[in-house]
Image (cartoon, rainbow, N blue to C red; front, top):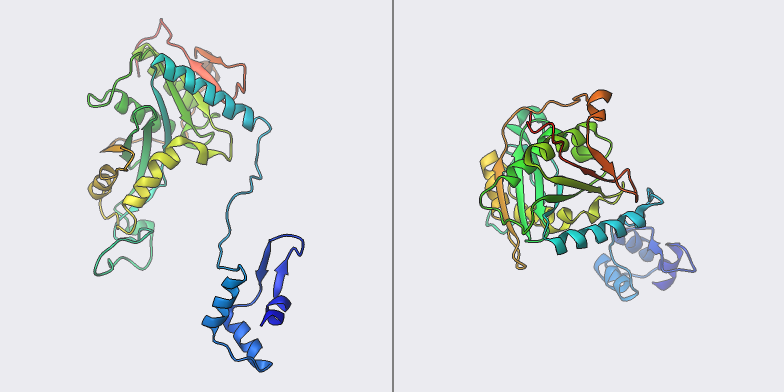
Length: 313
């Protein structure tokens, strides 16, 4: 048995990175050819005794590490501490994976007596809508808010969703709301290169008379954005195996998300048309009252209210 496994073992002989090239049944046939009769179940048991087990690939090798990655992480940590000590709002934002609404399979399993019957294929034309869930996670109070749209995942949609959260009467208010810190990814509807993202925040700052500071996580580091593991992961667990047959059902499943640590989640639908590819001119960019930070200025900046423009359009 050991000789057969050794002959079919690949990997680095100087490390623990080794694997068996053949399946259990192939090993069973090879052993039978030399007179060793073992079932594939027994072979699997013997492999486990030698430290082998079935393993999938693990995404852990960062191939796109930016040279300023660690510097940005340390800066975000310091900024968070300062905002928290001063009583300013801190939120983490992002768009969750877009979902087709209809009788489609949803990943995961749920306890039930009979499996849900869903379509055997997932075609866009069979969907009632394509939902765009934009999430806002209040880091200080462990509260999540998700706004579900059906139009484009754009900067205007993202800022509108955050504005809806800002104006909620039932959200927990902070001691000092003259400043707002937003943590987000480097790409998507809240990407650091998007001109319209910065323009929309300038309009928000003008209208509400507050300073908005934005800190982007480096490219390839979105999993460190708090909303991913403190909100989105639990929503996915809550609706695992549940077909999202309507927007109302999807919204209800999001609202039903909670954790033992006290996470509370609220969800609403955000109707409206948000066209993509909105152009922002150089002249409009020149009017922004934007100050880039000294550390990683491409990822850290503040939008200050313009006293001469207090109308949000």
